[in-house]
Length: 180
Image (tube, rainbow, N blue to C red; front, top):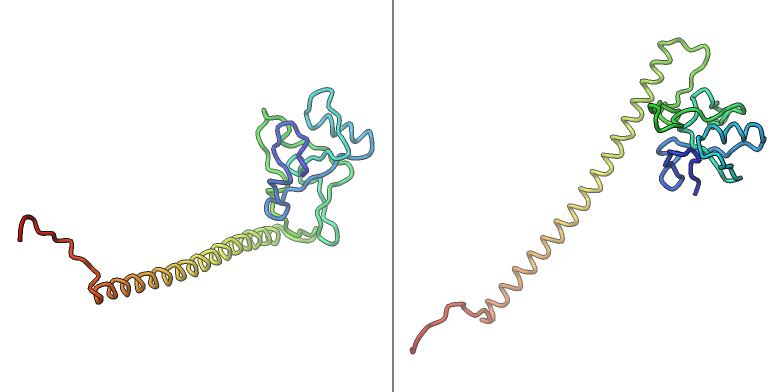
């Protein structure tokens, strides 16, 4: 399990999913000078030092600190230093994980970029509706099975009651008082 090294951040790999939440974890640099910059930036106590497993989540980097590889992977640039949402006193700023990824080319016009963002939002809405629809179908199947079981139990109870009446085993709850 990886935890974010920023003092007030509660993100861990156990609670956060890269695919669902869009948050990634990045290890401290091996270069001692850059490592020291990161250690100062994460706002920990004075005597704290990072280990080989220390990491910072993507919530603390600017969007400009990331680049996309040719295969579409999001990577952290070499000169990136954590700068967002470090102190609990500062207002929370939107980070890369809250910005939807859209393939923007330098030749795209503003209108094309806006349309790409709109398409991405509609894709997300469609995905969410598809998930809800699948959940509704599952619920419908479960309710049908439950209804079939209840119908079977009712038929069984009716048959049992008729059998006991037919054999004369059903005793009338009426009692007589006094001598007869």
